[in-house]
Image (cartoon, rainbow, N blue to C red):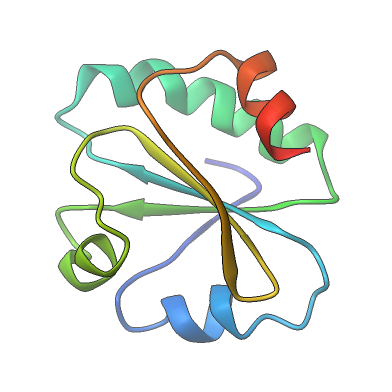
Length: 105
């Protein structure tokens, strides 16, 4: 996905929590085997391309069990907003692009 940073258990803290960019992160928890994630991925990609004021990060839950457990991700897709290292919102389930933007921006 263009404009989207892939993060892992190893680099989540450094890339997202300790970021000095001053921009909020939209963190997208997904899995390739979940149909709803395939549907929502196009919205996430559009948001990443259109909103320079955000950093969009994606986490494949199959590859990052520590971050998934730390943030209590039990359903997919899940979105988090992290501002200055702190969680500022969490949503689960498929959302339209407009819904995501209204919650995040």
